[in-house]
Length: 296
Image 1 (cartoon, rainbow, N blue to C red):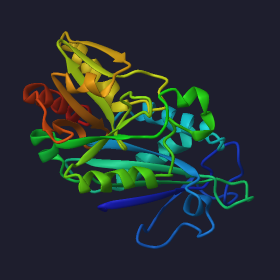
Image 2: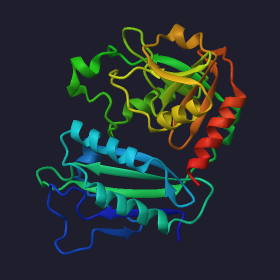
Image 3: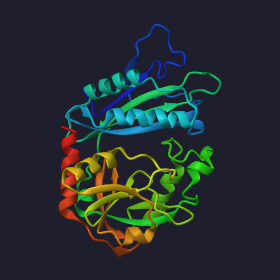
Image 4: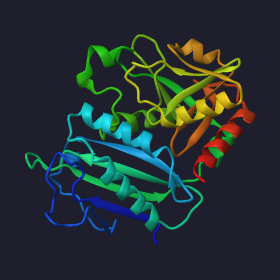
């Protein structure tokens, strides 16, 4: 058993040849030894896609939802379609090798591979998760930053790959450094024409009265797997749920708001653009207990 596990897929897509004929579907390798070619387009161009999946008690949460989103991101980049069966087996094998821990996660990565080789590269990395209890209970400070695109970029400019979970994460890391410079912990992107989008690694969810809402679809933002689970929980409490084209003022008027993601779960916003923001501690605790329960 290990604190980290790395699994390399031999044939990440049935639409492309295997890396080694006659070899097993995957190999568990030493994560401390280099495994990726320096010529892989994932390393040289960020040409690939990924998913991060939470794990509890040996079970990946929302696995099929993540696999479907993984395939949609690959299609957006015109990568060979991931073989869902092969990835599912590799994910479960990685989890089985991992030392038990209260919270773990699995990252799946598919790249275009070495240029002109025709064989994509795929791997699964499983590890213990950081301790996010403080963010879930005490909340986070958030600033809103202009993403520089209109809210309809997904329709007007599909070649910008808005809404695909790609390896090109330089901007998402840059905005977190900007947030730190402004005394904040995280970011909410706003479109160039003034609509709330998403966080660099999260989905925006907010409460307005007896409804939980999230920015509308077709905005070039990632479909939220955790948000979907939260909406189902909210509906079980009798709360309404829905999608809304929201402005920053809409968010400022909300009764509470969260940035939600697969590993950190629901982090309530306690400060927005330097101003105190209301925290619904009871609902936050309920949401996170529900999400943690899905990992059992």
